[in-house]
Length: 617
Image 1 (spheres, rainbow, N blue to C red):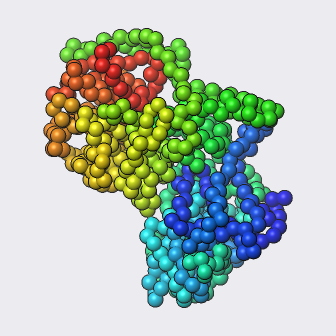
Image 2 (cartoon, rainbow, N blue to C red):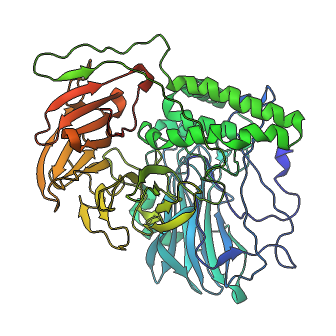
Image 3 (cartoon, one colour):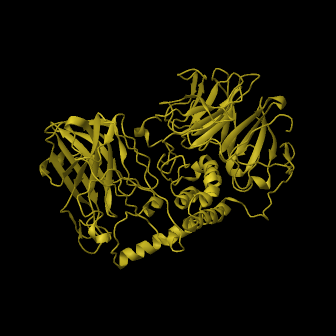
């Protein structure tokens, strides 16, 4: 019964996550105490669905959370501090309504490392602070209309005896015709600020609450940022808050509009991965634990993973290894839905790409040729031991070992950048896993790994003749040269976290190619610039070429996301995967002059990568 609450007995929240949100990391040595005399005896998982239409024809869902349990006592125990308003009333039409909560802290020191905000539709911004000797220190501030997960505290905050914990929720009653009270239905509101903390085990308390405002006068001094709403993209408002719906006609109309828009968006390519994730659910071979709805920019890095998920061995084995009844439906539905969605990424079969001859002086275009090309997946490779995040780059080193560049627990989604391409999640810190993995390609044995605490959003990977790694990071807007055995970069191009289009800045650079003869460096730049830049072996700017694609047919030298590079030293050419134009463009190394275009119907609408095998240009 949705009106009765999740559990009849006392329950404490341990974790929450919402689609499109980043993961939450526990600090080293920190764990939640469960079981025994003091801990909880049961785990209860509650999943809120925004749309149940997918279940009407017996489709099933595999959503879940993976818990890691140990009998080994942890030195630091995690807990939850819940701040919530219980008596706020939001008058109809009122533009700004504040709900303030504050309590004196009277326990042993605790260290805060994550927070979560929660309201329903009227919430604009929720902020939490520690107040010590009149000084306000921000714990976290977030729009409750964004995915309501636990976000990391950007700067470490400790709370000591007699500090004050304070929170403010800002609401608007505009659009309502009656008072809105605190409650559990979609027509009600909530004002919650969750704090995830840890304490020394001997003093640990697993759950604390604050439901009062111990000092209303002090909120006169709350930082102004707490009163400023955080803008949210309209497509993020589709995320429902998962409470029992007792909507009036106005809300029904709103929901109907939202459902209609979701149906219209179902075949949008940008939403393809999240739709597929929703169908596949959580499985052991899906490398990242959370589903994301990437922007169009992120598709390039996820398409390969989509194919891997769909073709993975358990699709064939689920039927034979388990009870055939219900699982047959599950597997069949996954495959059926995938093919329906996959068609959105493929051009119609009767669509032919123009292979017009260029104007005089513009080089030549490659004629179509298909040839025999057939690949089969090695379903047992690489096994389940290799833990990967979003894989953005692959290359072979001089010893023919496979090198993988991946994002660990970071993801590129619609919250990663603002409209000016500035990275918005620096508070997550750099990726704490090794992002560069060297594998024996025959057995997937890990030979070497590196790249920890260096990158935020890896993208391109290439390897020069000396075995140096050349990588790009779209969050940092930088290019790195790394020695295979060096901890520190040998060369860095670009300015960290500063996008730009001059000689010293990049804007989400995608790939690097190095001339094995001259040592010249070529960078494809990138998602928000449409150019190729050449640098000397020491990283000095030499020249650039390229421009944005104009309306109509893309002309030679125009790019719409130059995404991947292949250098062909035997012919002194640099070939570029012009992603959104669905073509390869090749240029002379010495001057950037256009040579030819290669375009084929098998490329589809987009072309993500290009590689060259000597002997068949």
